[in-house]
Length: 163
Image (cartoon, rainbow, N blue to C red; front, side):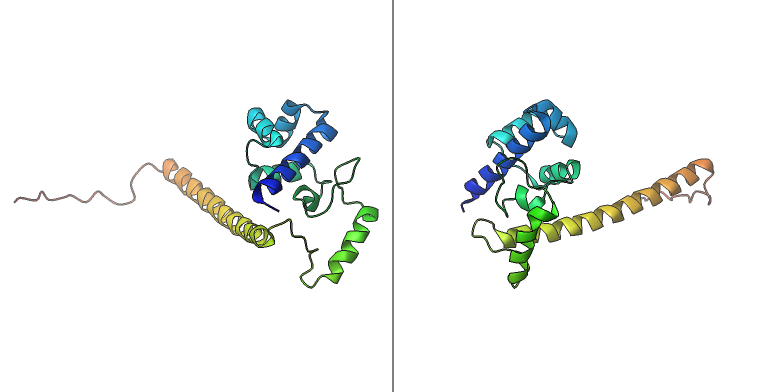
């Protein structure tokens, strides 16, 4: 599957979610996932690429939607977005168990890029947690310094340099 077809598939799934959960109201969909309304409209129409952050926002707002369905790994049911009901996932689980790598094989999905993106997301989350800890520590130190405005050591005089 070409990249354009893959992006169009995801845009179609986004449009399906907008129709099912928000009655086609783009504004409600945008507010629910924290995205700009005009950008989301362009994503659903396929004129703008959908980024990983937006996909994660949709999955965060709708935990009942399976990421495999949203990314095109499994076929779309006719009546509703794919959900994680046991009845519906049983055939998929059986198919996955027969695969050596634990995933159903599909020519339509660039799995190496997907796996690399998942690893990068994990690394970014770790870096974000470390940064948040550093910021919290620096804020605490800053507030302690503000409480005690006197410098802990006297200023060192600087001798002028004469050339």
